[in-house]
Image 1 (spheres, helix red, strand yellow):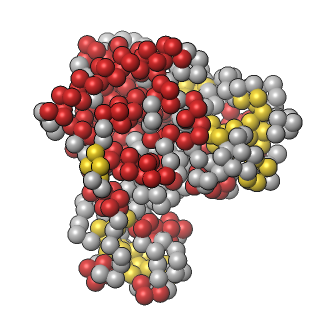
Image 2: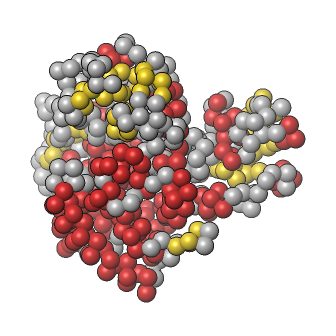
Image 3: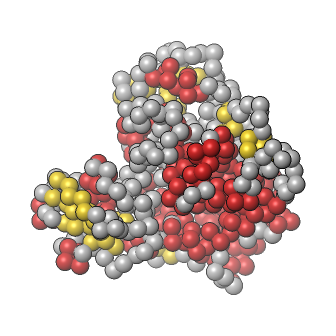
Length: 105
Length: 394
């Protein structure tokens, strides 16, 4: 399966990923620019913020209260903002596209 | 496991200056990724390898951080986030975390940082040479915290005395508990005030924070305030010294520091890697575990070798070189997992702002020629002193 990352300047990176992995880990393992994931997936650093398109957003479980709290502290938040460490890939998410905010370089 | 003799037994990593720490760590690395060294007079494990350290930070079963903090700091510091685990930690952290996330740092904290930098730099105007650690890097993060807490300037000195004493519990329990009483009573007045008349400041934000139907009681707010000084002041000040020592020594780095926000971010990140302020973090094993060939037993002290992991050649090529262009995403300076440094964004903004303001105010500032810089300490590490000439050779 594939996950597509688009940075704030429109540059597209396509990563071959495996179900079960987190979107954050999939990006950091392939050095995708614009995503840091510094705490390693504990919702503690707010450096893996990404925008999920509206269509994809509907297919994801909604964010937990803790994720919503952390998102509220991120910069440039949009309606479909997520912490990518909290999105676990499934086969149904093949082609998932994540746009990354400019504030996270 | 005291029967396994430490390597380099002539060195005590708790008490000695270890100016050559990185050389020592390289020598130790040849013996394995997890070694025995001497700390507080006793053999202690040290994790040197990046991958294993990452694993240990995330292993809350065998390395529950709260065990060490409950023992050494809870009596005087109270129940800080570091002494909590599980559900108690999750909800308590969620209540205070938003105040430290980028959006709030930008609106509540950033406007405080730059004026503090200017005030301290005003005081060195006209001086031919100063110890930049005493004049700037040490008071800077401390003052940012006192301003954040709404403490008037004329009380900053007494606050500093209490804050320093609070963490002295293992050596001076009576003094630490007295300091706690005085600190609490002082801060309680400010909390009471903000509970009744909220403003748009940091204390009001905490006094009225809510998460899953819970709010912060006074003791939880006080515990956070007590923790702010050692967690947010000592670390940033040590790292500020190391950062300026590197940047001022190299014309290319200095030019980069004047260029752009992105350049300053890269310099700060590389400074955090190259001379990590929380160099070796003492933790206690809370389970039996074999890590990197070492049989660690429950109750053993273990040093998390953050600075060693940040110079692990398998992760950071040519690790001793200060290179702001390297990929630093594996940086482990702020820890990993649920106890990941709450003040990471604040600390970074302080250091980036310091670089910009110092080099704008004193564009010719330079290290005093012939003055050697010694980095000291294996727990908290930074330069002992940093003699600079604010106006260059003028």
